[in-house]
Image 1 (cartoon, rainbow, N blue to C red):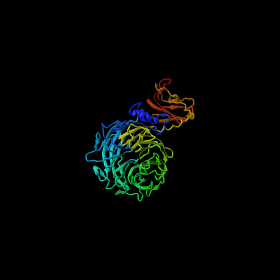
Image 2 (image 1 turned 180 degrees about the vertical axis):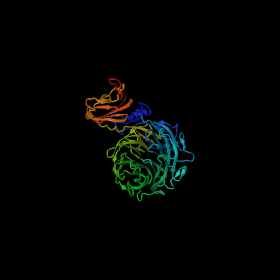
Image 3 (image 1 turned 90 degrees about the vertical axis):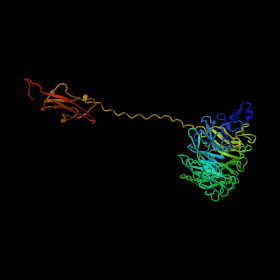
Image 4 (image 1 turned 120 degrees about the vertical axis):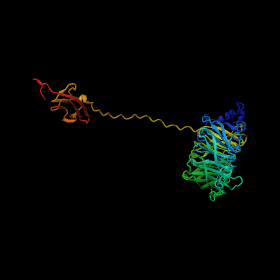
Length: 581
């Protein structure tokens, strides 16, 4: 166990805490994928944390915590602050910086429009897969609030809300009892549906899962339907006792199943989801002495389930149960979505692997699964601690270590006197797998942990280059031939006899002639065939003047050589004086 008080002699504040955290810090010998170490915290007046109380009171009693898909933002639903708080995240270091907040009336936050009550007792928060919207479950407002997210800065703008009874300026849930004391919220992977879990602190028989349709262009949500117990206007799970006080709801990665944790039912319900409409129908449930559900007795692992999550591969579902002080692995049928008990890790619960004497799962609530599927992080509210469980290839969890605060977190790395982990209610893992963030209600603090990410896959070996096949032998080009080289003609500078002149075809090496044709003023006068050609052109009878002589030589390979010459005809000279032609 590492004592921060000892480390304080070497440094101060968060630096001293980091010295202890180096026991499992990334890059340190022996660190394995998923190991975490405490780095720092941000709080409203908590010892050892960066204090933002002078800036805002919106961070009072953090509950739900969520990361944006781009890794640039972390959002916190603050129960006492009646707010949703935005922290900017440094992509390189994971450090958080308070950016802004939207609240009912908290100092330093943008207030909701006058007359709107949509963030009273904010407890759950979710970011849409496209990163464009944030949704908050507000318990005392009986509402789901919709805030538009700036995808560049992460800043939030309140847009609207849906509530039970059209209270606080929100749209109505069609008169159905679907959002009474809304406690959790999630968005389907395809972004078309938002689901909320509801329960009542005064009615032990009530619980519901509400279905809201989401406009993927604007993010606006509209109430559609619900399923629950003792929930007016909602469909029921039949005789099964599985949906009383739904504190957590999640959707499988393939979008075909929704799972709801019924705290008072001691059960987890499997609801089949329509891929086209998002509508839900009850399928089955698994629990601990829960009527109508598959019973895991005598194993004590589902007493008051608090949080439920599905592993990235979709083959396992994990549940934290505060009464059992346990984390259960439920195996999921990828084809049907049905659940069966797999294994559990607990603090003394019957049938589970015990972590005693370590005290890290006392009243365990919050749960987060790493994107690489190798780690599970849970938080014991009464421990108080954040525990790391490693997941083997089958999905079975094994306790690895914990970071806690004070004498109650026996066996954990101790952050005292830093006050950052009292009553942890929410936890999230950054998309890049390099950080874990927790929200502690009694500490009013957000803690940052560094995490050893999964190693990058080894690239396949570079194949040995195969020499290209030899190029085929080039087809010999036919010998060059041209009209000028092949054809012998009289000069055009002087006139020629009006009687005749001869065209001769020269013998070129490698060239075979097929024929030659001669035309005078467009009229063919001669056509000769043969390889050695001599063509006399008779101009007898033509008047004195200029004539166009066109010669076309056809080669044996089909090519043609063509040329035109213009000649002047003249009378030939004869002895004894001029001769009339």
